[in-house]
Each structure stands twice: as structure tokens, then as C-alpha cells.
Image (cartoon, rainbow, N blue to C red; front, side):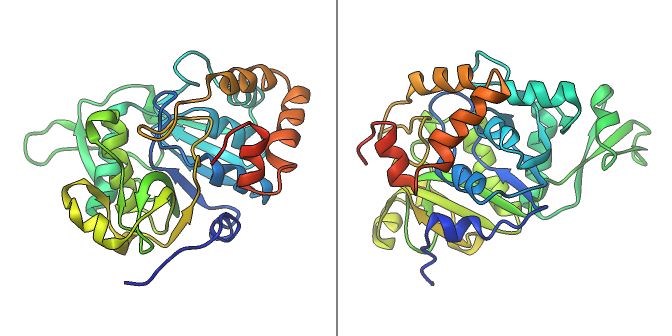
Length: 291
């Protein structure tokens, strides 16, 4: 196995303009394995025309929209810590500056499962709703077995999947933590999207030895052969919390929501918290976190 350690700046350079990007662990709440440090670096590098895939889009996607990085987003829910519609997403949707492909939790699950299995689609019967008009890649057909009307839920296979993990070794064997502490969607979506993606970037709270990873193989959800880059970023999910490491910064969530309410105040947020800090350490110092 070969070590894949690199810096945030180097990892973000693996994401070319126009890529489809999957956030493998969704922002199900304030405690979530969202790779925020990498997302801020993507914004700093002014990536453009990205197509975002994520089960639930929250602050991370809203930040990318407000910074002008996204052209489209696909998810089944859009919310920030369960209490607010993401302001930049709402504004862009009203103005028609972003394409939104909404679907259901079940169709997202099937798309991720198909991608992880290496098949083009999984058939689903009885799926008659307005999601169909937003997904030209889905096709209706009649089952040759029983004559039921069915829909092909296309595999979700992003060009690049990004995910934050508590622990990884230098080769990319990674643990998501105790699955009892993870939302069911997060526990499923991260390893499934990683297996289906063409390229994978991990950011990690800790870089540990391969011996430590091997000591508890049942907890190793992501394997080295799927991973292209590993970045050591303590507090890399801030303002989200990571179980066993740190609590979410709820005050920062509130500050973000207030700032994102208008384009002018969001630009000030972007300047202060994303563009001016020289790196992830400078950002943490700015928000008062000791890594």
C-alpha cells in the first residue's frame, strides 16, 4: 500500500472545474462528518460549474452556492441543522441560477447502492411523482416479468467523492466511528458513495497506523483501494461536531444563517471566514478553536 497524504490545497486541485462532486456523509444535523475544511479550500480555489450530489444539503452546499461554485445540486432534503432552508440555495432557486434535482430518500439510497455495486441502475416500481420530470436520466419501462410500470434509478457515481472521517491510516483505510452514533443515512451513504465514485478524497481528524486500523476491522468502513487522497485536518468538520472529538459550534451556525440572508452580508462572511484565513489552522484560530 502507498501513502496518499497531501495538503488541503493539493487535494482540492484534484477537483477540476465542471466536475460532479459527492459529499459522502450528509449534514443530517449539527453533528456530522462533513468535510468543511476541504469545502472552504474549494471555495478559495474558485472552483466553478460543479454538480453537487449529497443526500441532505446543508451549510456546506449553501456555502458553495453562495460562492458561485455550483451549477446544480441533487438531494432529497435541503436544510441547515434541521431548522432553516439554506438562504443562498433559496435565493438561487428563486432566481433560477442553479439547477435543483430533488428526489426521495429511497431513490437516493437506490442510486448510491447501484453506484457501489457497479451497475447502471436499480429498477423501482410504483414511483409516480413529480421527481420524474427533474431526472431525464431515469427511464420508465414495463417489467417483462409481471407487467408493472417501473423506473430505472440511475447509479450515483460522482467524479469525486469527499468525506471527513475520525480516523484514517496514510493509505486511506478509514473508520467512520461507532455506527450507533451515526444517522442511518450517513452510515450507509459514505461507504456506498466512496465505492461508486471515480476519485475519493478523505479528510481526517487523526492519522493512525495501519496496525491500529487492523485491530478493529469491523469498524473500517472505507478501504484504501477506493481512496486517492488523505488529508490530516483536525477540527476539519467545524462548525459541525464530530462524535468523540468536539461539539458543534451552534453559535457559528447562527452567525452563518444571519450572514447568508443577504448577498452583501454573505460576501462579508466569505471574505472573513473563507478567503482571508491563509489555511485551515488560521481559520480555526479565527473561530477560537484550538486544534
